[in-house]
Length: 249
Length: 388
Image (tube, rainbow over all chains, first blue to last red; front, side):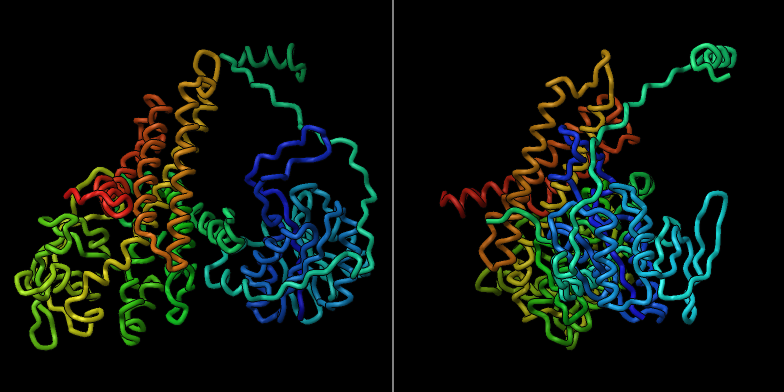
């Protein structure tokens, strides 16, 4: 069984994000970039399925600028077998990504696509669902547990108020939530092996997809600065302030 | 000329930084209080295959260069582990280079894999109490008796001798008065420490309590002939091979420690408000920090230059020594400034910077004094008369 794992290059989760002065987006120049943490969880899940003997090959796919190759390399160091880089300078939005992934799925014929439920940059939470729709496949989103048996996947989903378990008929798309697993650290021997694993580089045109954005970003702004809190000396003072200032009671 | 790290070097840095997040400030603070070797860090590095970073691939290593090893060691120090973390594995990264270069196939197959796998730790026994840096005057004797050598004498400042299973030992096999040159007659051994014949007495010291430093006494310690590395009498020559890489690694560690000190100081300067403004708004606070940054960056360039030269087989003695000097001094300046920036709180253990200041004294003092580096540069680079 082949697993396809899309991985996105995003601003590292430790970086304090800054909005560009012209309000067109966030500053990425000179900023540390890493693999989207949810995608790391997806790679880890795929690698675990391979270690269990369920999967035979893991293909990591990334789309965007040439440096996305580094993100693929990270996936290869974690245990993916080969990579595909769809190189483009275009601003990629979920629908374009899903369309290109669909063409790659048609070509590679994986039984499972495992991907992050969302990327931490734009928080769209759309690509996995769109891909499943385009393929006409089952989807198990926000997975906190995945079990594969024969041509069935059992996915435990994190939903409001609890857990929901769904049974999917394979092939399927699974999107990963935070508690699915804890991604491994790449070991040195695996970093070395990753160097020798192949990465195929193609363009959106090779997939017959026009990646031009359909959505227009009007403005990106910083959230308002949080005001400092106030210290109160007594419960009575607190209640008074809640009544007169906050007007919540 | 390309000053950027390669993807692979970035990956090394990243992976090490991630492992080190498991060993937080509290871990190192506690180690500094109570002592105890950071076995968990050593094991984590072994499990990730990191101890073999510059060992040959035939024996389970990764076959990378000193540049990558320097990046790795720097990332450990910079994580806040400082010298407590770096020294715990430092010797295991490059110390066995004489075995790699001069050992037989049998020796390499026997000695390298257990070290890389973390099953064995090694210590490096060269320095003696009465010789200091005048290494050729070593007095520890190894006398050949049949198929073994019998070692008597003492060593000092032997790091990790409490926890190591193995020892790389330099001892005199031919007395000084019977050799043509003083550099001859010393032999190198890599052997198992027999605790009945080797006593390691820990030296209480200023910092880095987690990683022991020792006086070591040999009392008729027997070393099998098959544990001798290379030819008898050529040990000094062999040991010289590892000197430049060692300086480069410790320099990288010093820059790493300086960086974490600077980062803490900068953060504190932004947050600490006195007279209704952050203290970092005062030039008296910010200028020394800016200076520390520049010094660390300049030292780092020299470290990377020296490592690059070593990995390309170019002469690197001057650069390796200069990098050790510059990095240690830059690191010291940064650590000292970090304490000063914190004011009185800098003296409290809770803020970690006083620990950094105590630890940064190590790269200043060792493996060679700053004065002797100046002598070396004056004599060997500038061609001035030898002064000592």
